[in-house]
Length: 378
Image (cartoon, rainbow, N blue to C red; front, top):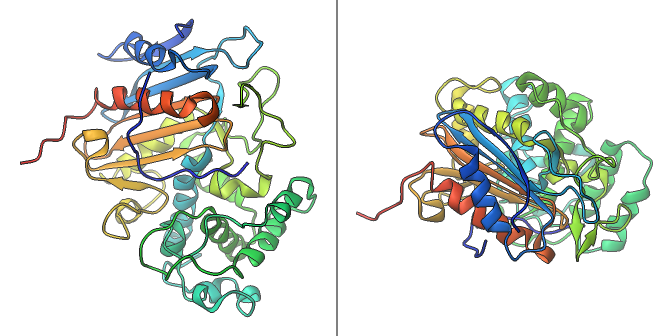
């Protein structure tokens, strides 16, 4: 189900003593991460969580707690896959950036040129928006279609996902803008679907194939899945005190560029570490200046490309890259400090209706404070 997830971290409160799994390399033992998760889950209905700490561009500790699904005794395991929701937007932006670096796309090309077949039917206000506008939520596009009946027709659509995305965005590009392009950021899942459709037209390949070949394979990320639900031996998403329903509680597969990917925490950390390494000239995917462009706020405040750019996240010394993600059944948070190569990732197999959001923010707040100094105004 569509839910709004932001690119900045906001304060939230509160933090089931459950058996856990742990791996650690370094001076912050996994037990410390485990204690944070236990406290964060206390008093919440979220069945399971996991967290990973990055220090000096390496994984320092990972811990998981709780169970994969309500009614099951199967404990969360280190290599379990988690739904990342809108945290996948940074991956989509990185794919687009790599295509730009390769000359297959250009940052400044107007949308009417990238999608000429839709130029006549889209609102005139959208014809001149560019890839940076789309990827920083500054294209003026609404967050999603407001026609939910239309949206859920895609759940049973057997057409290839690129064709589905084109059909979806053709309708969305006829919606009235929420504001002028390149003004105040207004969160939009649609913008990322439009950017993916532009990449598909430029390359003749489906987004799902492109991001695996261009982003995940080069980083050794092999746990990726575009299915929102795993098998019987994987964690399940939860909503309203129950296991989420695969028919009624999910977004259609064509929604992947805006946030419908699952992977394990070690693989997610590979992506995050590369994002930070990239700013120091050691990235494996993009030019150094391209990483820095991705991470720079387009509005001069916080809206970067697929990321939130936070000067002082959670009261800590930045700058930092942040994002949160959820489809309503899962919750995922990330906070990275590229200057030091430190960061923290937190995931939960439930969201707002079961306290997964509050538990995740509480855990991230505690873990981020172990890898960044407090911010003090001078």
